[in-house]
Image (cartoon, rainbow, N blue to C red; front, side):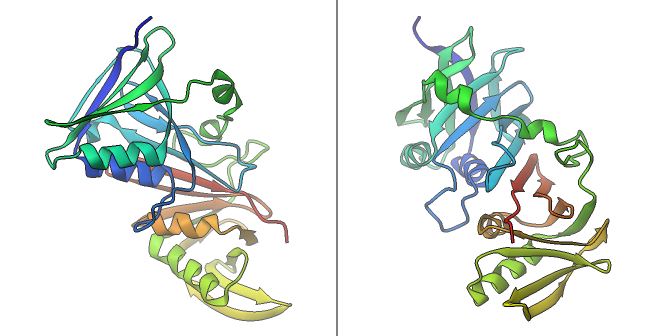
Length: 272
């Protein structure tokens, strides 16, 4: 069966590029996304990037409301799934963009909803990007992370209970934490909640090398958890209010919602 149109999205190229950079955890000024390929699912109300396992160093699960786009046309009642190379799609989008917006169409099998190619168009240019067609790859993609968040974006631990420690803070406080780690050339990122405050505490050979109180409203038990350098990438892509959810010896969920985006990043804890 020849490929048929499954869904078409229209928006300024900058909107699509922002979606890609947030879901791929690609900081401004970088040309290296954290992930090489993206799994995208499109339904009547949203674009979703289902994420990997919480056992991975960093998993991202982001949703974008279709109302954020200039136009959307999709298969009614169906879900479209596409897996594509992030850098290839972004580079062709840059090439096609003539400043007047682009249309991104997903062609494939209407019965399965599986896209086989992405067609990027402007008024005077067209490019096609092949989608990954290996069914074994799709079968290997772990998709449990969306189920780890409740409808009100509370992150559940392995036992199903909500992460008990919650910090309402700002992205610039995460970047301050990341800057402290970079200044010390440390290997891990400490996330500390102590005595009702969100803190930066860098311990080196048993000595407190640097410390600071970070702005944030805290609830729940004290924690001293360490995470990998992916936390620095997450801090670099975010803006405005963020919610941190964790617990003693638990993963860290970083959640923010704004302007049609809901972004969820989960980092596995580094063993001390």
